[in-house]
Length: 306
Length: 196
Image (cartoon, rainbow over all chains, first blue to last red; front, top):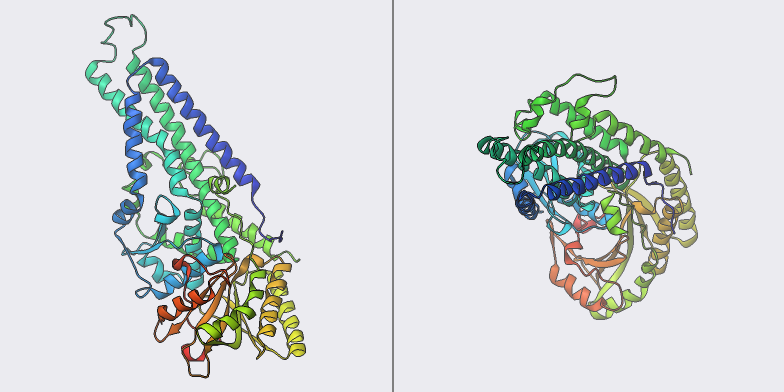
């Protein structure tokens, strides 16, 4: 077995396992409570499941449409295709489709339900701002998302949150119109109304699953960073690209990013302690500092003499 | 394991397959008989330079080693950086065995230094017997352990018909890459004058 200079980060994998376990546990408890209450709310779970399957199956088209991205051929973008060709050969993976989104925000995304239906897209703004090695590092990061099947993992992980969110709304309205304490007709005498319990449980499940999903997402980002650094052999180039992108990102108003994220309005709470802020719990990406720190550690590993 | 790796978001760099290369000399004989292509005596190894002192040391060791082996076998060996950020070791020698030996030396030294996963591909030059231009190279993908033909023509076009004929001739002799979508082009080869 040939040795390699790129060690696996066991801590990151362990944290991810814990997060996934907690999500699974939450899922079991949620289903258990709903079944114990004997409600017909299980129907809602089926609806949410159907929604999610559709979202999963059409993830590439949905993302392409919402980002206004169009596929490009090798003749149109020879350099972009050349970089992706080589990265795919280096990583031994099937080549995804390549798309460009006509927006000036420097960004890139990967989508598609499996590696055979994957699309890697970059924005025109990214192409304009990054030089070729930096572009390559960003593309390697996106290809890592494809290789890690992040669309599938995050879709499954976010299922519970979506179901709980739907159920909250459902319970709220049925409580509103049915009356929270009004329906104590037959056997349910004096007990807490089922609708109220479901409402409270759903809100709690939604909140916790939201936090866990976000934590999982941050771990996936760190994993993709690590894989990209290993693939290109140049952690610092990815770091430079990240700094460049986030520098540009914070300067440009991010209204259209936030519009996809109505919950964000609630989260400008002050920091709890130095170095730890509420917002870091809610964000889908790790902080720039955290990502740079990891890349610097990989760079140090690489620099160590044989 | 594959499932677990993708679940945990960890992909290990894939180790290269180095031994398939020694089948090239016998494949060259088949190729000359069947399609009329002869080795040009040139080959290139493309690898991705990593950052850091360790790789720099490896690179220095490698060029010394290559210079030394070049003196012994009479091959000329030079380096080249392409526009995609890959480094090439270009080996030229009239004897195909020596060319393959030189390529293997590059592979081995990178592998031994722990940078085997940085190897992208190697390209062996072939052109028609007795003549002018129109090359059709053999590209070896380290991570797949497969070969495929690449016949560059002017202006980002390739001669697919010739490539498919080469595939037909070499079937059974070399491991030909089965997925046509992975026959990725390598434009601007460092040794291919006609194709600059």
